[in-house]
Image (cartoon, rainbow, N blue to C red; front, top):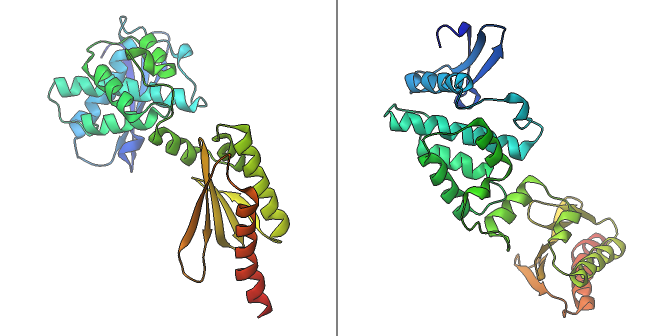
Amino acid sequence: MREAVRDVYIETTDSPWNEKVMVKRKKDHLDVKITVWKDNSYLYGRIYRLFLYIHDIRDTVFQYDPARAPKESEKGAWDLYSQTWGIYVDSRLERARIPDFYDRVMRRNLFTEACRELPWKDSFRLFDVLWQRERFTHAEIIQYAYAPETLLDRPERGKETLEVEIGRCLREHSVRRHLDRLESDTLKSLANEILSFTVYHCKGALIRSSYYGIHFDYKKTTFGELIPSGESMLLTLRDFHTGRPRTMAITEQSDLEAAQKAVKDLFTMHFLDSQSA
């Protein structure tokens, strides 16, 4: 490596999460820039792991090909690409018994977070498979970034697990996306009827998306919420007099007019009557 690397530039950072290595290929050598956290904790292991990336880039068996790697704009694939290569690096530090800031537990948690479309059970299994492997090629890391479940015998696809659904709601939410979680057109129609009724009959009410559902607001006060999920949805109305929420499950067989009346009565009683009093 000494012959291949001509210059090494070092800069510091205030966070261990910002540590990285950048390599520029020249005609007959590499120029390397490493960013290192300004702290002595696990310093040897942190420097060692950064140079393992350089070793991989030069390794003819690894066959590094940056043109094929995911772009940073491909958020999901890029995260999995970075985490999988990180597993390859940090698992070697563990086998060499070199203390490392990115130990097995931390690396597993970061990898699970990157596997947004897999249940935790599958992502844990996948992590164990990757951690135990002693050799990777760059092409394999790229493949797993786009299709991580190919390493599993029986990935649990199909019915979405709670953690996957919650994770998606936290990352991306809108009224339309929440309604798309309903499995039948009949339920979607009922939900739209409730929302349209609320806007029309509760003058000044605002319909907005939250992380986990659809809120009914009036002058910055939330008086109701609709949470669509699969084969039903929950309509919760806030009883301002008792302080207790009233929740009703709405299915295809539910009485739509009763739900709409409950929304209108609450709005009228709390907001309009209080204004005229």
